[in-house]
Amino acid sequence: MKPIDFEILLDHLQNVLKLELNNEDSSRVCFAFENEELRDDFKISFTTNDAELYLIKIKNYCDKTSSTKDFIINKNSKIPLPKTAELFWNVTKFDTKN
Image (cartoon, rainbow, N blue to C red; front, side, top):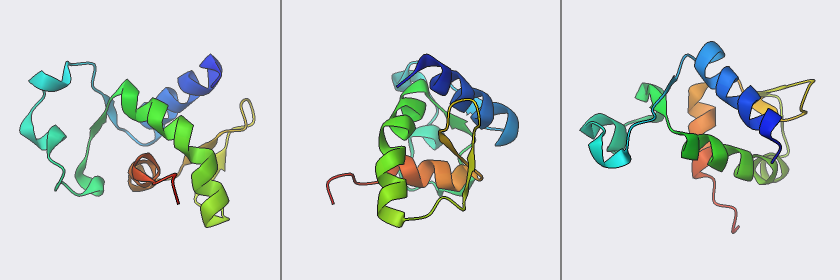
């Protein structure tokens, strides 16, 4: 993973998808953030770990789904950026073992 990819992804998540970067210790964040039952379309914040996980899983996700139509391809880094927050969360949960 190139540092530029990470910075581009952070910028996209915050400025395009309007998600908030949560730098708090996960043991101190509110229940809503840690609630696994919370629907992805209601999540408003992410951590740097979420962004790293996205970058790790995105290639396998695109290979498995055979589609990049729901992504914006960044010309500077060639990483697929999600068009929606829900897609971002789907990629982070994607099981790469299958």
